Length: 405
Ligand code: NDP
Image 1 (tube, helix red, strand yellow):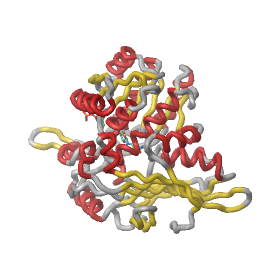
Image 2 (cartoon, rainbow, N blue to C red; image 1 turned 45 degrees about the vertical axis):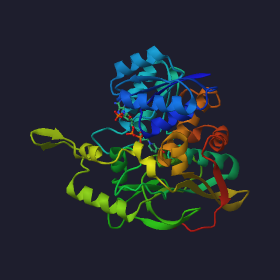
Image 3 (tube, rainbow, N blue to C red; image 1 turned 180 degrees about the vertical axis):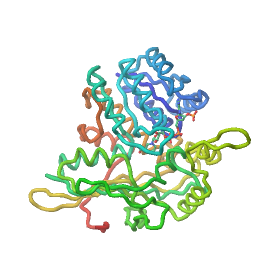
């Protein structure tokens, strides 16, 4: 039914390739391309062994638009799934426009030299995708991604108006390393050291970064894993949901961090090894955070000894038939089970499965359109059905727990 080109052979790329390979009736032809060919070849060998399927592999520098356009024109996919890094979003969108192919990603654009991400750069492509009759779907991971779809589902079926959204992301797993990040270390550290923002009554409210005195945090009682300290954090889906959910008064994002993680991060920040600007070392220019990345465990290899679970979901409060109601929708995912199925830990799994499902929605015509879309703008129903079917079953309950006012 559909030919896909997956770009990026990291932790998430591995999951997307495996999950697409498990569904030959939808993904009839798969090519995995990345900067390092050997990583694609390793995933190809694993897929041959586990799913008895052949996929194609290619080497590409996705920062190089002409090189990437030539690859896309040679392969002629129906869809490009971008699971490289946020730095490549615009060059991959440019190549898709040039080659006339649909696009999907899991994280919004971020320039290499500024630790700042926002949708405006990618929303600016709306007119060009529309004019070519092409579809670009942004942020089809878990958060952003499933977190947006939970909002769309709640808006469609559970509320007349949603007033408050709290997205709560808990990783209660243990990988056994003194310090590691669960996805690309550079992107992860840039994200979590930022000034925090949430949206309230039409305005962005700033609070201190998670490692600072005065950061906002509280203990949330998560299903299955129990109470965990959860920190207010800025996350990209806040920007699109604040725009697209009607009646919204406040939206916040919370993530759990252990004291051990925060202590490591504080020390790294204080000694300057998380810096993103160039410094002179031994006659050469180096970027400290890139050097740090080479020292830290590769998130794609963390799965081997990972135990425990992730619990990610939304508490949404609003009005239904004149009455106030609070609903909690969430998924629980197990690190060891994810590793058993596709050789990856649960953070990669909870990102890669929704990327595969978003791709499936586009290839099967359940999601159609011209232009650039965030996930909450598309029909949540077939996506929610697919989540349960393909590895990320969700639970829904009335919420009577506590959240900060
Ligand atoms: P990794 O660093 O493990 O993988 C990234 C891959 O992209 C690597 O294989 C890398 O190649 C490749 N790559 C980087 N630059 C280029 C380039 N110029 N050309 C071609 N390939 C390139 O990251 P993850 O798999 O952990 O994350 C992938 C994406 O998923 C990121 O954008 C991340 O932000 C996003 N994400 C989204 C989440 C969500 O819930 N929405 C959650 C977690 C992650 P090489 O191997 O040579 O370095």
